[in-house]
Amino acid sequence: EAGVAQSPRYKIIEKRQSVAFWCNPISGHATLYWYQQILGQGPKLLIQFQNNGVVDDSQLPKDRFSAERLKGVDSTLKIQPAKLEDSAVYLCASSYSGTAGSTDTQYFGPGTRLTVL
Amino acid sequence: AQSVSQHNHHVILSEAASLELGCNYSYGGTVNLFWYVQYPGQHLQLLLKYFSGDPLVKGIKGFEAEFIKSKFSFNLRKPSVQWSDTAEYFCAVNGNNRLAFGKGNQVVVIP
Image (cartoon, rainbow over all chains, first blue to last red; front, side, top):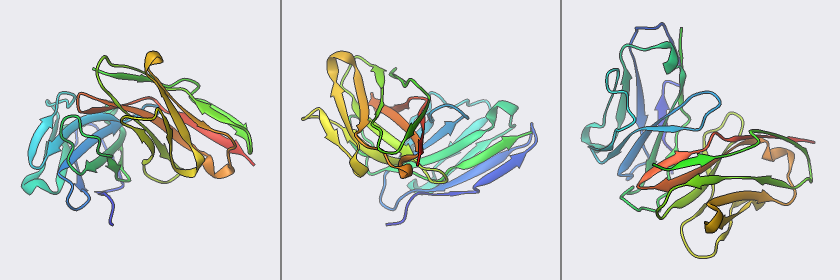
């Protein structure tokens, strides 16, 4: 089965510019997650979708970050405007259901490495 | 909210040595526990997981982990490592439907 796809793999921008990342989850997976992984840290959840609804966006910096999952499949994460501290790897993951108390495994994509200059 | 602690961020050992990585978490409710691994140039993948039942869990590539509820720990072990085990290992805890990761252990196995 195909894994989680992400693009681009690398992106370099200047501060105050905007950037967008794309994710295509595993077919049939209802839940999609975006994580931010800063160098030397573990991934941190930014937002979780179940189908096309937001389940948890409590750790998303909403003044500059936005995400959508139209039609409950693909998702985009946008940063506008970017700051130096946004330099990180942005990971997308998906799981079959992701309902509360679920024991589903999350499957991760390769990530997008963002460098903000 | 739950939090996860992993110590000894950098571990260097020789082939055939034993490996143990510590993981402690803080969360008062029921948790699901995971170890993920990221090999050089590859994406995060599941190594093993614990949900319930036998607290000693066996995963891929000879890894195992033991859940000790009283110690809030989920330590990862492998009796004899290989060069191909060079990777970064992350402990993760799912409580309240959110997966929280530790900072990871960078493990380098010298042939």
